[in-house]
Length: 261
Image 1 (cartoon, rainbow, N blue to C red):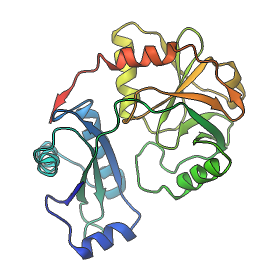
Image 2 (tube, one colour):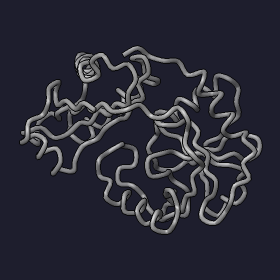
Image 3 (cartoon, rainbow, N blue to C red):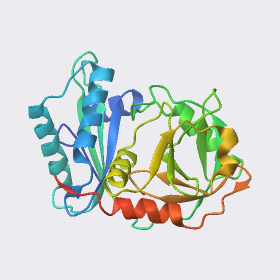
């Protein structure tokens, strides 16, 4: 693993600042052979977050500098998980510092099917991938203590939102259904929606009430680590997955082009 702050190893005081000030936003990338899917969307996410949380708009020149920081942190590593985090600088009113961390790539296989528990929770500023994760991780811990693998958030309006670190996709027997709600528009989710539209794969964005969950044939967790991790059950409801949702999402994902870093 490697971590660099503004292109160099952080010192102890900087590590203390980063660790103790729970403020900032980030994006996570899966890098393969120095390439990434949806690079423009990742950069746009960072730009939007910097403007909202720091009052700092990233220009074209700064985007090139940011790519340089990612390349520098990667070095000779070709395959990796990369997290780019904007954290407060020494002057908390000034532009953010950039922390780039490099770790092992996500496994090629999506992992075993998840058993998820629905919980009433709505993330703050849900459109941003930010570091305010106390409430999120509390719900995740509670779900695991109850014997589940993960949590699926339902808003106070009774509508399905998102998972702890993933978007959720449902299969109604004929098309992919994405919940229309205040959520993080995950890069993988957006790329899948674009790919499905290009390839004529039917999908729909609409509100999904928690009461409807028993009517879906299948569900999947969609994230930068996996485009289609099956969900085996929601609460005590088993999902009779015939494999069509996973096949549909993986087929669309295979058509998404790679971008050179």
